[in-house]
Length: 200
Image 1 (cartoon, helix red, strand yellow):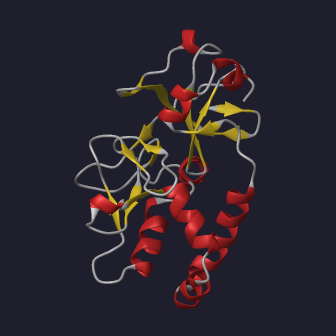
Image 2 (image 1 turned 45 degrees about the vertical axis):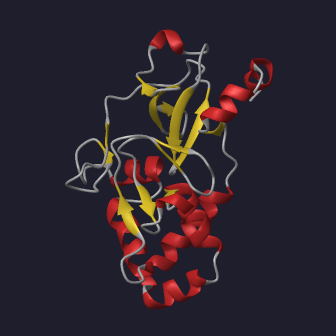
């Protein structure tokens, strides 16, 4: 979707069972899950947004590719929605790997980020930090990027992979941008009065 210079993805309408299609009658009445620069948010659409003819494609059990339109067709739009191209995310994850982790993950069901507690929709790109699910081993891309850009290890990472230096600076600027809406957390949505949510 477009709204002025802003480009973002309309992911769906949140329910307790997961995401369902967001319809035109939902505009201004219910929450939408959107994604911009890898940040999943709950927000209310106003009707000023322009629907494009492009669709998202997400990871599958056979490939971790994701994007907007056809694979590799719209790299700038893919960055605008997901924050990183699949190859960029894979490069960072591979550069940080010790033994078997971290790795890129795939799930047929919604997951919860172990650090931010945000919902990660089924098929959505995420990072698995270990094989110890009991202790929380899944992080969303937004949280993963926040950890990377704020960590002292990012200097070590860019010294080994100079091609990442410009990308990490760009991601740091994006992370510092103020985001509209609320983090995609169903418990927060369920426990907050409607009049408070309406002001967000």
